[in-house]
Image (cartoon, rainbow, N blue to C red; front, side, top):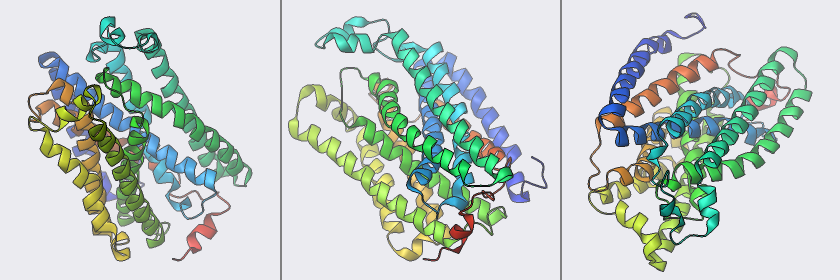
Length: 390
Protein backbone atom coordinates (compact mmCIF):
# COMPACT_ATOMS: atom_id res chain seq x y z
CA UNK A 1 0.00 0.00 0.00
CA UNK A 2 1.54 3.30 -1.08
CA UNK A 3 0.39 6.90 -1.12
CA UNK A 4 -0.70 6.69 -4.76
CA UNK A 5 -3.20 4.03 -3.77
CA UNK A 6 -4.09 5.73 -0.49
CA UNK A 7 -6.00 9.03 -1.08
CA UNK A 8 -4.20 12.11 0.24
CA UNK A 9 -6.90 12.98 2.79
CA UNK A 10 -6.76 9.51 4.31
CA UNK A 11 -2.97 9.26 4.02
CA UNK A 12 -2.68 12.45 6.08
CA UNK A 13 -4.42 10.67 8.97
CA UNK A 14 -2.07 7.70 9.17
CA UNK A 15 0.69 9.32 11.20
CA UNK A 16 -1.68 11.05 13.67
CA UNK A 17 -3.56 7.76 14.12
CA UNK A 18 -0.31 5.89 14.75
CA UNK A 19 0.76 8.57 17.24
CA UNK A 20 -2.58 8.36 19.07
CA UNK A 21 -2.28 4.56 19.23
CA UNK A 22 1.29 4.78 20.55
CA UNK A 23 0.52 7.39 23.22
CA UNK A 24 -2.63 5.57 24.30
CA UNK A 25 -0.74 2.30 24.44
CA UNK A 26 1.97 3.75 26.68
CA UNK A 27 -0.62 5.24 29.04
CA UNK A 28 -2.56 1.97 29.16
CA UNK A 29 0.59 -0.05 29.86
CA UNK A 30 1.46 2.27 32.72
CA UNK A 31 -2.09 1.84 34.01
CA UNK A 32 -1.62 -1.92 34.16
CA UNK A 33 0.98 -1.26 36.87
CA UNK A 34 -0.52 1.80 38.59
CA UNK A 35 -4.21 0.82 38.62
CA UNK A 36 -4.30 -2.79 37.43
CA UNK A 37 -7.93 -3.59 38.24
CA UNK A 38 -9.34 -0.68 36.22
CA UNK A 39 -6.76 -0.77 33.42
CA UNK A 40 -7.25 -4.49 32.76
CA UNK A 41 -11.01 -3.92 32.69
CA UNK A 42 -10.44 -1.17 30.11
CA UNK A 43 -8.27 -3.50 28.03
CA UNK A 44 -11.06 -6.09 28.15
CA UNK A 45 -13.57 -3.43 27.07
CA UNK A 46 -11.45 -2.18 24.16
CA UNK A 47 -10.51 -5.69 23.02
CA UNK A 48 -14.07 -6.98 23.18
CA UNK A 49 -15.24 -3.91 21.25
CA UNK A 50 -12.65 -4.66 18.54
CA UNK A 51 -13.68 -8.32 18.41
CA UNK A 52 -17.32 -7.29 18.06
CA UNK A 53 -16.56 -4.85 15.25
CA UNK A 54 -14.51 -7.48 13.44
CA UNK A 55 -17.30 -10.02 13.84
CA UNK A 56 -19.88 -7.50 12.66
CA UNK A 57 -17.88 -7.02 9.46
CA UNK A 58 -17.64 -10.71 8.58
CA UNK A 59 -21.22 -11.30 9.77
CA UNK A 60 -22.43 -8.58 7.39
CA UNK A 61 -20.56 -10.21 4.51
CA UNK A 62 -21.78 -13.69 5.45
CA UNK A 63 -25.36 -12.47 5.79
CA UNK A 64 -25.31 -11.08 2.26
CA UNK A 65 -23.93 -14.32 0.84
CA UNK A 66 -26.40 -16.47 2.79
CA UNK A 67 -29.43 -14.44 1.70
CA UNK A 68 -28.28 -13.94 -1.88
CA UNK A 69 -28.39 -10.16 -1.49
CA UNK A 70 -27.15 -8.14 -4.46
CA UNK A 71 -27.49 -4.53 -3.25
CA UNK A 72 -24.59 -4.88 -0.80
CA UNK A 73 -21.95 -6.24 -3.21
CA UNK A 74 -20.24 -2.82 -3.63
CA UNK A 75 -19.92 -2.64 0.18
CA UNK A 76 -18.43 -6.10 0.59
CA UNK A 77 -14.82 -4.93 0.71
CA UNK A 78 -15.68 -2.50 3.50
CA UNK A 79 -17.15 -5.34 5.56
CA UNK A 80 -14.11 -7.49 4.82
CA UNK A 81 -11.79 -4.65 5.87
CA UNK A 82 -13.73 -4.26 9.11
CA UNK A 83 -13.27 -8.00 9.74
CA UNK A 84 -9.50 -7.43 9.59
CA UNK A 85 -9.56 -6.00 13.15
CA UNK A 86 -10.71 -9.37 14.51
CA UNK A 87 -7.14 -10.71 15.03
CA UNK A 88 -6.16 -7.51 16.88
CA UNK A 89 -9.11 -7.75 19.26
CA UNK A 90 -8.46 -11.46 19.72
CA UNK A 91 -4.91 -10.78 20.91
CA UNK A 92 -6.27 -8.31 23.46
CA UNK A 93 -8.80 -10.83 24.76
CA UNK A 94 -6.14 -13.51 25.09
CA UNK A 95 -3.83 -11.05 26.88
CA UNK A 96 -6.50 -10.41 29.51
CA UNK A 97 -7.39 -14.08 29.95
CA UNK A 98 -3.78 -15.29 30.10
CA UNK A 99 -2.01 -12.47 31.93
CA UNK A 100 -4.69 -11.26 34.34
CA UNK A 101 -7.47 -13.85 34.81
CA UNK A 102 -7.96 -12.42 38.32
CA UNK A 103 -10.14 -9.79 36.65
CA UNK A 104 -12.89 -12.41 37.08
CA UNK A 105 -13.98 -12.73 40.75
CA UNK A 106 -14.54 -16.48 40.41
CA UNK A 107 -10.89 -17.12 39.44
CA UNK A 108 -9.22 -18.97 42.30
CA UNK A 109 -12.33 -18.65 44.50
CA UNK A 110 -14.52 -21.64 43.80
CA UNK A 111 -16.79 -20.82 46.76
CA UNK A 112 -18.03 -17.74 44.89
CA UNK A 113 -19.33 -19.98 42.15
CA UNK A 114 -20.56 -22.97 44.11
CA UNK A 115 -22.51 -21.08 46.76
CA UNK A 116 -26.16 -21.49 45.84
CA UNK A 117 -25.39 -22.92 42.41
CA UNK A 118 -25.41 -26.35 40.84
CA UNK A 119 -22.16 -28.16 40.11
CA UNK A 120 -22.47 -27.33 36.42
CA UNK A 121 -21.58 -23.69 36.99
CA UNK A 122 -18.51 -24.65 38.98
CA UNK A 123 -17.36 -26.87 36.12
CA UNK A 124 -18.21 -24.26 33.48
CA UNK A 125 -16.13 -21.58 35.20
CA UNK A 126 -13.14 -23.82 35.64
CA UNK A 127 -10.23 -21.70 34.37
CA UNK A 128 -8.65 -24.32 32.03
CA UNK A 129 -12.05 -25.03 30.43
CA UNK A 130 -12.77 -21.29 30.29
CA UNK A 131 -9.49 -20.69 28.45
CA UNK A 132 -9.95 -23.59 26.05
CA UNK A 133 -13.41 -22.30 25.12
CA UNK A 134 -12.00 -18.84 24.41
CA UNK A 135 -9.39 -20.31 22.05
CA UNK A 136 -12.08 -22.34 20.28
CA UNK A 137 -14.33 -19.29 19.82
CA UNK A 138 -11.52 -17.13 18.45
CA UNK A 139 -10.08 -19.87 16.23
CA UNK A 140 -13.50 -20.57 14.69
CA UNK A 141 -14.17 -16.89 13.97
CA UNK A 142 -10.71 -16.27 12.56
CA UNK A 143 -10.86 -19.41 10.42
CA UNK A 144 -14.20 -18.59 8.83
CA UNK A 145 -13.28 -14.93 8.38
CA UNK A 146 -10.00 -15.77 6.68
CA UNK A 147 -11.60 -18.33 4.33
CA UNK A 148 -14.48 -16.08 3.25
CA UNK A 149 -12.23 -13.06 2.67
CA UNK A 150 -9.64 -15.16 0.79
CA UNK A 151 -12.28 -16.58 -1.58
CA UNK A 152 -13.75 -13.14 -2.17
CA UNK A 153 -10.39 -11.67 -3.17
CA UNK A 154 -9.49 -14.72 -5.23
CA UNK A 155 -12.65 -14.10 -7.23
CA UNK A 156 -11.21 -10.75 -8.36
CA UNK A 157 -8.52 -12.68 -10.22
CA UNK A 158 -10.45 -15.73 -11.39
CA UNK A 159 -14.07 -14.57 -11.65
CA UNK A 160 -16.90 -17.05 -11.99
CA UNK A 161 -19.82 -18.01 -9.78
CA UNK A 162 -18.28 -21.08 -8.13
CA UNK A 163 -16.40 -19.03 -5.53
CA UNK A 164 -19.64 -17.19 -4.71
CA UNK A 165 -21.33 -20.54 -4.12
CA UNK A 166 -18.41 -21.70 -2.00
CA UNK A 167 -18.64 -18.57 0.13
CA UNK A 168 -22.38 -19.01 0.44
CA UNK A 169 -21.87 -22.47 1.96
CA UNK A 170 -19.14 -21.14 4.25
CA UNK A 171 -21.35 -18.22 5.29
CA UNK A 172 -24.28 -20.43 6.26
CA UNK A 173 -21.97 -22.62 8.34
CA UNK A 174 -20.35 -19.56 9.91
CA UNK A 175 -23.69 -18.07 10.95
CA UNK A 176 -24.65 -21.29 12.75
CA UNK A 177 -21.29 -21.48 14.53
CA UNK A 178 -21.32 -17.75 15.25
CA UNK A 179 -24.79 -17.88 16.82
CA UNK A 180 -23.66 -20.40 19.43
CA UNK A 181 -20.11 -19.19 20.05
CA UNK A 182 -20.87 -15.48 20.32
CA UNK A 183 -23.63 -16.17 22.83
CA UNK A 184 -21.25 -18.25 24.92
CA UNK A 185 -18.35 -15.80 24.54
CA UNK A 186 -20.39 -12.80 25.71
CA UNK A 187 -21.56 -14.87 28.67
CA UNK A 188 -18.02 -16.01 29.50
CA UNK A 189 -16.12 -12.75 29.01
CA UNK A 190 -18.65 -10.18 30.20
CA UNK A 191 -21.48 -11.72 32.22
CA UNK A 192 -19.13 -13.80 34.38
CA UNK A 193 -17.58 -10.57 35.69
CA UNK A 194 -20.57 -10.78 38.06
CA UNK A 195 -20.96 -14.55 38.52
CA UNK A 196 -23.98 -14.36 40.83
CA UNK A 197 -26.05 -12.61 38.16
CA UNK A 198 -27.48 -14.20 35.03
CA UNK A 199 -29.66 -13.18 32.12
CA UNK A 200 -31.03 -15.60 29.54
CA UNK A 201 -31.13 -12.90 26.83
CA UNK A 202 -27.66 -11.49 27.47
CA UNK A 203 -26.28 -13.11 24.31
CA UNK A 204 -28.94 -11.67 21.99
CA UNK A 205 -28.54 -8.30 23.72
CA UNK A 206 -24.84 -8.37 22.85
CA UNK A 207 -25.60 -9.44 19.28
CA UNK A 208 -27.98 -6.52 18.77
CA UNK A 209 -25.37 -4.04 20.02
CA UNK A 210 -22.58 -5.75 18.08
CA UNK A 211 -24.35 -5.64 14.72
CA UNK A 212 -25.80 -2.15 15.26
CA UNK A 213 -22.35 -0.69 15.97
CA UNK A 214 -20.93 -2.67 13.05
CA UNK A 215 -23.49 -1.19 10.65
CA UNK A 216 -22.67 2.30 11.93
CA UNK A 217 -18.93 1.72 11.46
CA UNK A 218 -19.49 0.29 8.00
CA UNK A 219 -21.54 3.36 7.06
CA UNK A 220 -18.82 5.73 8.32
CA UNK A 221 -16.07 3.88 6.45
CA UNK A 222 -18.11 3.74 3.26
CA UNK A 223 -18.89 7.47 3.49
CA UNK A 224 -15.20 8.30 4.00
CA UNK A 225 -14.10 6.05 1.12
CA UNK A 226 -16.70 7.47 -1.24
CA UNK A 227 -15.77 11.04 -0.33
CA UNK A 228 -12.05 10.40 -0.86
CA UNK A 229 -12.38 8.51 -4.12
CA UNK A 230 -12.04 4.70 -3.88
CA UNK A 231 -15.81 4.08 -3.72
CA UNK A 232 -16.92 7.14 -5.66
CA UNK A 233 -18.16 5.08 -8.61
CA UNK A 234 -19.11 1.91 -6.74
CA UNK A 235 -21.30 2.96 -3.84
CA UNK A 236 -24.35 5.13 -4.45
CA UNK A 237 -27.22 6.52 -2.41
CA UNK A 238 -29.00 3.20 -2.93
CA UNK A 239 -26.53 1.41 -0.65
CA UNK A 240 -26.63 4.18 1.96
CA UNK A 241 -30.42 4.11 1.95
CA UNK A 242 -30.38 0.42 2.82
CA UNK A 243 -27.65 0.93 5.43
CA UNK A 244 -29.75 3.66 7.03
CA UNK A 245 -32.76 1.37 7.11
CA UNK A 246 -30.73 -1.38 8.75
CA UNK A 247 -29.39 1.02 11.39
CA UNK A 248 -32.94 2.15 12.24
CA UNK A 249 -34.14 -1.47 12.35
CA UNK A 250 -31.35 -2.74 14.58
CA UNK A 251 -31.44 0.31 16.84
CA UNK A 252 -35.09 -0.53 17.45
CA UNK A 253 -34.24 -4.21 17.91
CA UNK A 254 -31.56 -3.26 20.46
CA UNK A 255 -34.10 -1.11 22.34
CA UNK A 256 -36.59 -3.99 22.36
CA UNK A 257 -34.06 -6.39 23.88
CA UNK A 258 -32.85 -3.70 26.31
CA UNK A 259 -36.42 -3.10 27.49
CA UNK A 260 -37.20 -6.82 27.67
CA UNK A 261 -34.23 -7.47 29.95
CA UNK A 262 -34.87 -4.45 32.18
CA UNK A 263 -38.63 -4.90 32.41
CA UNK A 264 -38.50 -8.58 33.34
CA UNK A 265 -35.90 -7.96 36.05
CA UNK A 266 -37.85 -4.97 37.41
CA UNK A 267 -41.17 -6.85 37.36
CA UNK A 268 -39.85 -10.03 39.02
CA UNK A 269 -37.98 -7.97 41.65
CA UNK A 270 -35.78 -10.89 42.70
CA UNK A 271 -32.72 -9.96 44.75
CA UNK A 272 -30.30 -12.09 42.73
CA UNK A 273 -31.44 -10.38 39.51
CA UNK A 274 -32.04 -6.78 40.61
CA UNK A 275 -28.50 -6.31 41.98
CA UNK A 276 -27.20 -5.86 38.43
CA UNK A 277 -29.68 -3.06 37.63
CA UNK A 278 -29.48 -1.45 41.07
CA UNK A 279 -25.73 -0.97 40.68
CA UNK A 280 -26.20 0.62 37.24
CA UNK A 281 -28.94 3.00 38.31
CA UNK A 282 -27.25 4.38 41.43
CA UNK A 283 -24.06 6.18 42.57
CA UNK A 284 -23.84 8.29 39.44
CA UNK A 285 -24.36 5.39 37.02
CA UNK A 286 -28.04 6.26 36.62
CA UNK A 287 -27.37 9.15 34.24
CA UNK A 288 -25.29 6.92 31.96
CA UNK A 289 -28.07 4.33 32.13
CA UNK A 290 -30.45 6.86 30.56
CA UNK A 291 -27.85 8.22 28.12
CA UNK A 292 -27.30 4.65 26.92
CA UNK A 293 -30.89 4.42 25.69
CA UNK A 294 -30.73 7.86 24.07
CA UNK A 295 -27.53 7.12 22.15
CA UNK A 296 -28.34 3.59 21.01
CA UNK A 297 -31.95 4.12 20.00
CA UNK A 298 -33.74 7.44 20.48
CA UNK A 299 -31.34 9.79 18.69
CA UNK A 300 -30.35 7.58 15.72
CA UNK A 301 -33.97 6.49 15.28
CA UNK A 302 -35.24 10.08 15.10
CA UNK A 303 -32.34 11.24 12.92
CA UNK A 304 -32.68 8.49 10.32
CA UNK A 305 -36.44 8.04 10.27
CA UNK A 306 -36.98 10.40 7.28
CA UNK A 307 -35.95 8.80 4.00
CA UNK A 308 -33.94 11.83 2.90
CA UNK A 309 -31.78 11.68 6.01
CA UNK A 310 -30.65 8.14 5.24
CA UNK A 311 -28.92 9.32 2.06
CA UNK A 312 -27.67 12.61 3.49
CA UNK A 313 -23.97 12.00 4.22
CA UNK A 314 -23.81 14.42 7.17
CA UNK A 315 -26.94 13.08 8.84
CA UNK A 316 -25.98 9.45 8.29
CA UNK A 317 -22.47 10.12 9.61
CA UNK A 318 -23.84 11.95 12.67
CA UNK A 319 -26.28 9.13 13.46
CA UNK A 320 -23.51 6.53 12.99
CA UNK A 321 -21.16 8.40 15.34
CA UNK A 322 -23.94 8.60 17.93
CA UNK A 323 -24.47 4.83 17.65
CA UNK A 324 -20.73 4.20 18.18
CA UNK A 325 -20.73 6.43 21.26
CA UNK A 326 -23.74 4.48 22.43
CA UNK A 327 -21.92 1.18 21.96
CA UNK A 328 -19.00 2.47 24.06
CA UNK A 329 -21.48 3.62 26.72
CA UNK A 330 -23.23 0.24 26.64
CA UNK A 331 -20.00 -1.74 27.06
CA UNK A 332 -18.80 0.69 29.72
CA UNK A 333 -21.98 0.06 31.71
CA UNK A 334 -21.63 -3.70 31.35
CA UNK A 335 -17.92 -4.01 32.23
CA UNK A 336 -16.76 -1.13 34.43
CA UNK A 337 -19.32 -0.86 37.34
CA UNK A 338 -18.05 -3.97 39.19
CA UNK A 339 -14.62 -2.29 39.33
CA UNK A 340 -15.89 1.17 40.30
CA UNK A 341 -19.22 0.72 42.04
CA UNK A 342 -19.02 3.97 44.00
CA UNK A 343 -18.31 6.30 41.07
CA UNK A 344 -19.00 6.46 37.35
CA UNK A 345 -16.25 9.02 36.80
CA UNK A 346 -14.10 8.08 33.78
CA UNK A 347 -10.41 7.28 34.33
CA UNK A 348 -7.52 8.17 32.06
CA UNK A 349 -7.08 4.46 31.33
CA UNK A 350 -10.57 4.44 29.80
CA UNK A 351 -9.60 7.06 27.23
CA UNK A 352 -6.21 5.42 26.59
CA UNK A 353 -7.78 2.04 25.79
CA UNK A 354 -10.45 3.57 23.57
CA UNK A 355 -7.93 5.76 21.73
CA UNK A 356 -5.80 2.70 20.93
CA UNK A 357 -8.92 0.86 19.69
CA UNK A 358 -10.13 3.78 17.55
CA UNK A 359 -6.73 4.51 16.00
CA UNK A 360 -6.08 0.81 15.46
CA UNK A 361 -9.48 0.41 13.81
CA UNK A 362 -8.66 3.11 11.27
CA UNK A 363 -5.15 1.85 10.51
CA UNK A 364 -6.07 -1.84 10.20
CA UNK A 365 -9.27 -1.38 8.18
CA UNK A 366 -7.69 1.06 5.74
CA UNK A 367 -4.66 -1.16 5.21
CA UNK A 368 -6.91 -4.15 4.59
CA UNK A 369 -9.20 -2.24 2.23
CA UNK A 370 -6.38 -0.96 0.04
CA UNK A 371 -4.81 -4.41 -0.16
CA UNK A 372 -7.52 -5.46 -2.63
CA UNK A 373 -9.81 -4.06 -5.29
CA UNK A 374 -12.17 -1.38 -3.86
CA UNK A 375 -15.18 -3.36 -5.05
CA UNK A 376 -15.40 -7.11 -5.87
CA UNK A 377 -14.87 -6.80 -9.63
CA UNK A 378 -14.98 -10.57 -10.15
CA UNK A 379 -18.45 -11.06 -8.67
CA UNK A 380 -20.84 -12.03 -11.51
CA UNK A 381 -23.69 -10.07 -9.88
CA UNK A 382 -21.80 -6.79 -9.48
CA UNK A 383 -23.29 -5.25 -12.61
CA UNK A 384 -26.79 -5.94 -11.28
CA UNK A 385 -25.92 -4.29 -7.98
CA UNK A 386 -24.66 -1.15 -9.73
CA UNK A 387 -27.94 -0.86 -11.67
CA UNK A 388 -30.21 -0.99 -8.60
CA UNK A 389 -32.34 2.13 -8.22
CA UNK A 390 -34.63 2.80 -5.28
